[in-house]
Length: 441
Image 1 (cartoon, rainbow, N blue to C red):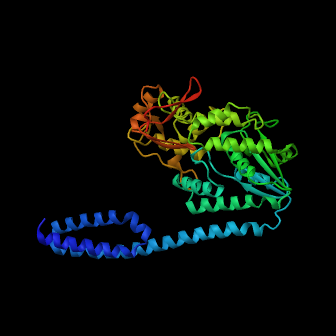
Image 2: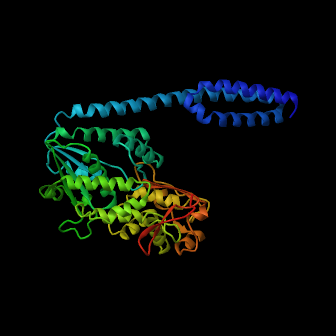
Image 3: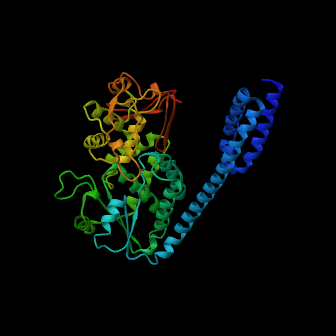
């Protein structure tokens, strides 16, 4: 490059870097160097093609884009702050608006059961927990507020909602829980599967650190219902059926609170052997907890093939001739003793298996696995046809390792962060126990 070209490019670089101050500081820190490098590359190409005039011409669209984008980023930053402040305000205001909260506070797993509870005729407020705790990080030693922020970020990273919206929901939920003394009774409505049992022990852990005072804490938790042959969960019940469970509630004691707290701490431990040790105890006071937590342990990569149980089941049903997303979801549900995974979570698993250096699944048309459009299941999503790759067939029979062929893993299972060239812990499907992998980091 000649002296004159170096001069015009150098001046342009300094000027461009100076103009970047128009962007918000956080945006500039994250993207400034990359933007400068792209602009420099464009300058060099412009000079090679048209000399100094080419570089000067480049500045016209660059300035226009810079002004427009800087304004847009400032607006985005302001909206982000406003949404966060609104979430804080609503979380603080909600208990005041609730007054004395009525006689009862009902806490359940999600909007479906919450909506049915509204139709039962039972009085009181309804609080839905709505967190897929079997996916993503639950580090140890955190307050509910700290955990909610981490969980909101994880859910947002999974594209299941914006961070601001999810955090606002969690803050509203946590603020309502903190006001439980305003109610004469808190009733926990849950079922037997992993999704619900994790929510239950998180709540029990929270109550174990708060004196109930005059408030009664009760539990309704079932794994079957008369007349329903294939019971999956409370969401199957109509208002009359759900209302009938009210009389079966039982008052919780220190035994359940302590056990729930121990279970939550074990689940959040960075050492999964703590959870296995916990499961060796008598935990029958929470009768569905043992099976649920054992199912969690099966999500650790298997010694042979490196697949979790969910991943293996997905691969098996596809190998058997089931190829479209909803059909795969239904078939994998049928393989579960106690189905716990929602469809959105399964789509994430399908996407993971379709990506990486050597994917285990692929679309027959060569396209990228697509998620459903927000709000509905579009044809493009429903009609995707998935098949096993050669690596997928090998992994399914244990001749290839899903983790090793993709150069490592980065996944949270409760408080355990599996990362590095290999998973530090693997599940021995024959002995049904975890084994530690030496030198996995």
